[in-house]
Amino acid sequence: MATIYEERFAYHPEDFKTYDTERIRKEFLMEKVMDPGNIRLVYSAIERFIVGGAVPVDKPLKLETIDPLKAEFFCYRREVGAINIGGKGTVKVDGTAYDLNTKEAIYIGKGSKEVEFSSESAENPAKFYINSAPAHKEYPVKHITLADANVLHKGSLETSNERTINQLIINQVVDTCQLQMGMTELKPGSVWNTMPPTGTAAGTRCTSILTCPKIKPFVILWANRTIPATFGCTTNRW
Image (cartoon, rainbow, N blue to C red; front, side, top):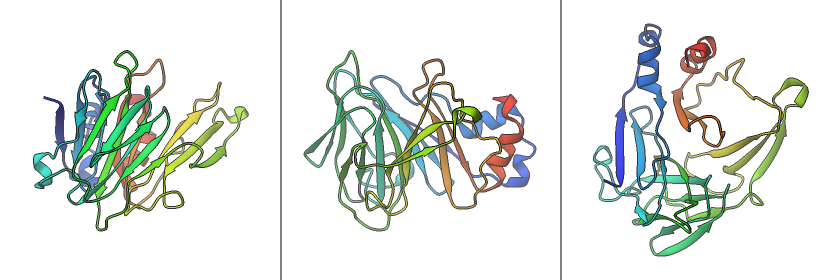
């Protein structure tokens, strides 16, 4: 099976306070993101957000619809963003091929019927980090390079959080309905963290660590003020 998915459900902030470590990990942690030869997705009932990864090796991988979408094809009423963190790859959308180097992204708008991921080399496959959200309007497909990104330099070595934020899929760069994606790169010697944690009521976010050589890729799903604040108090659990 090339597409593997699981569903996660909504929570109540008061219920969350009773979760132990095992329950927190079960509900909010996606441990297996990049799986060679497969597309792995998590469909969240929180805003119907989807997060996952695609690692094509010796053959292309088609982004197929999944049962929770109740749709003829994946982008029937959704938009998709993908960032390549692996070797050179290609994303084909309705017959048009877009070649993505490492750290490049693609926005795929609502109504795109066929989406396919492939790698130039099986020895060094592309690794596409995927986000998807419901969309109300069709916008054109766009390939985004680092030269196109809105780049922010933040922090300092003295505070161990010197980093470059590459805002790849944002409204200043590409037209989207609600999807926003970026990639943060830490400078040598920095260990950027979330203390104090970010608090927001402005929708769902996915915090991902995907390219650290000593850490297996993972994603944390969270939304509104309650979850990140609680994570900040219980970081030692992870």
